[in-house]
Length: 472
Ligand code: UD1
Ligand code: CA
Image (tube, rainbow, N blue to C red; front, side):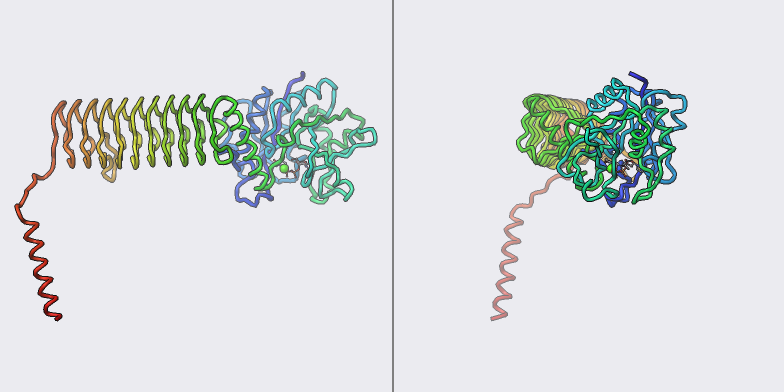
């Protein structure tokens, strides 16, 4: 096969989305559309990838990871898809071979289909080959016109088509393979004589046919993968398709999804065998979940790593966390970024953990805030414990060594360090370090006044009696 370069068209605003945001920045399963297309391009190992940008050019550029292969060219005036392709000419000046043209708004196309297109293009020695598909509702797409021998004549845009032509159900997917020399030569002949007054890349097909060049089309196996995303409805359709595919893959690999229509799992999430995912769960970003885990309803986990046998009970939010084997989280817990919960540890209801590590087998079961803390093994954090890590200016650490017992309603005024095996009496405000194995208690001594409560009751009752008598 000849050398390959890829051009990705991503300059458009996407009028039909009615958005302030450029179309290719709209997300699918949490990731901008353009990234899907760039990934497909990279998978084909081309010599070069040229991305044509225009609307929100800087934002589009910023969401693509840098690579020496990828270059960006700005299309000044959005004069149409042919004009967009033309912008890549300079960047490809030293290149000779086949150019693959992809649309930034056709993100679901399969690598296999692109390889099939390139193989067919090269085996037949074509000048131009493109992917078409037959769909039940072709509205919005360019239609493929063929002659009586089924040979391609041209592609006509819906807006320029006659009533008869609009009935054609074979559509252009906007994915083309073309010989470089032929492509840029033909582009010079494209005119803007159409309803939109734009330069259409599709005109190159007609130019090729007229010039007796070799033109071919291959068909996409599954129309869904070549759908163009022009409207919010199509965006939602693509999202649903991607989600369904991901859930199917997971189920095939031994994960139980209780209700697939109400479970949201991103493309970069992995889940081990025999894990169970309850409904209304959102697993996002780069997240891995081990085997035998149970994720109960209303949980959102982002960019996190969970070991095996982890249980996340109802209604938890976990971001950038790391959770060891057999740990239990929730219900109603929040793990904010950089929280590490080690093997067998338990984080219970209404506990918030931030940038802290909780050691093996340690427990914080109720109503606590643990921030900037390092907690050792086998520690018990009583209900209502708070690490006071912030003085309005800076954050300070709390260190609690192994096997410390923290009584309920304790405040640690950080920075503070609690030595191994120490006991903190309930209700204490800890402002100083506590030595190993010591008891720390900081609360006012209790006073009991005998009979005080009874006397008060009698006093209140007698004054109420007087008021009643007066009113008669
Ligand atoms: C295009 C095809 C149509 C095909 C459909 C498939 C043309 C004229 N029509 O129509 O035959 O059925 O795709 O999805 O090509 N872009 C630029 N610069 C521009 C114009 C567009 O970069 O000046 C980019 C857009 O950002 C988009 C892509 O090119 O990523 C396609 O443009 P779009 O306007 O969506 O074309 P369609 O009307 O969908
Ligand atoms: Ca489109």
